[in-house]
Length: 193
Image (cartoon, rainbow, N blue to C red):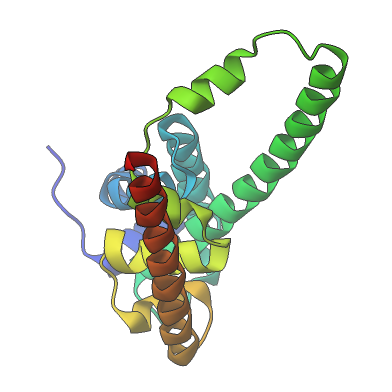
């Protein structure tokens, strides 16, 4: 069994290629990095891949880590960038699939589409749906605060914005979530009557 290495020794060992230090680096940070990626990407397989890529990038960029912030926050920043890139690619694919789906549907309007059936049958939680509908910057702010329970200062560091911006994003996100949930309640009440 490997003993835990302090951060300074861990960084030094990783930079010099020490296999034990590299293994400890992955073991120490993988659960938190995976959890962050999963909360952003909402897909366990993609989150696992994003976590691996993020940790490898962090390991390869350790020479640029300046110890000005916590190591985990620096790794979170790398993870956040990886997840944002994946979301951009995902949105591009979704737009393409959406266009192809509508083009196909226009040519075959009478067919029963499994995608439509799956969407109708989906019973997602109202709060999660509201959070997922937020723009990326607001969704990430809410996720870092409530899912990862990070303080405002660390969130600002990870997002590379001021603490005031984090507070403003939190306020805006709360307002939008409240509006979305209020609208959902009204819709549910209309469905009942």
